[in-house]
Length: 119
Image (cartoon, rainbow, N blue to C red):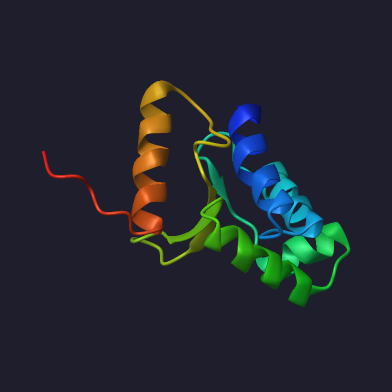
């Protein structure tokens, strides 16, 4: 599920403020296109994404860096396998049930190291 209002306010707003370039939004779209609809993970490397999009790998890496700075995506590591993957900010795009979405919020917050509020 793609939340267009959030996408417009975050991603398009960042582009309007010159914090993101149009090619960064193209890379974000490429990442969204590679989301596993069951887990919410994006299991694609920067090199593979650049090849899919027919862009330079260095441009893809730079775009991913800017997207991470804007907290639109996060890079996470599976603790058991050591495999790295990307997560799209669940406020922008999400998959699965309400429980699965809650888990995606938790994973994303851990990946960008947002501390939990005390209870």
